[in-house]
Amino acid sequence: MSLYKFRSKSSGDLIMMGPNGDQLLGLIGKAPAAQGILPAAELPAAIAALERAVAEAEATAPRDAGEGEADEPDAKRAVGLRQRVWPMVEMMKRASAAGHDIVWGV
Image (cartoon, rainbow, N blue to C red; front, side):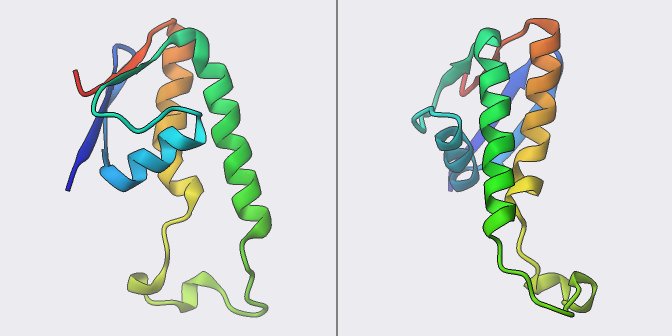
């Protein structure tokens, strides 16, 4: 199984499993690749794209009336898109504020 290791001078490294990294890159309009760069100038648009995707996913997610997540065993709870992309959004915000690029596979 492949891994993505995203790096930026403005934050710690972020490691994602291959399928999750592929999904994230697709959401921001990048093709999955072993190496790549998100230039600082593109980060605001990428952040907006991820936030929009999270909002759409949450708007269309089925809701069980009267069933709380606290009632479900941990093994049955799915990791939502918000949880998957939050670390990357935080990395992007820090990198954008500092004017740093984000790279992977280099």
